[in-house]
Image (tube, rainbow, N blue to C red; front, side, top):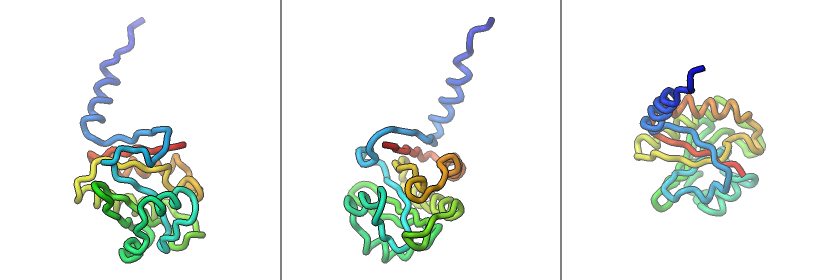
Length: 161
């Protein structure tokens, strides 16, 4: 019997870590993430943010008028500059009482990726976006995140309580 060859997994892991891209999972409070991480979550075009984790974003960062002034539609991403970080608002549906689509989520993530690349953002912390009250399936969402970000040097940490 041959011993396991740890160098194989190590080389694959090293290549992934050197590229910068990674999708990490962490149990804990999203709002305790490093202050240098950008934050991201999903909202409706009407910027209601009246339920779920969106309430905490609204309470912590405010900026509803500034978000509304950006006039973002489903499939786009609004951003607020708060101190030394960006807070991203992925617009995934028109009204607060609707459900998002995977297509709008993907488009919003692409929009966020482009903003990150243009502004030197290399780490984002987020909840399991679209999977709480919006009821999207995490397996699908994580695949979309990987598809959108895997060719970048942006790391994403997903927080769950």
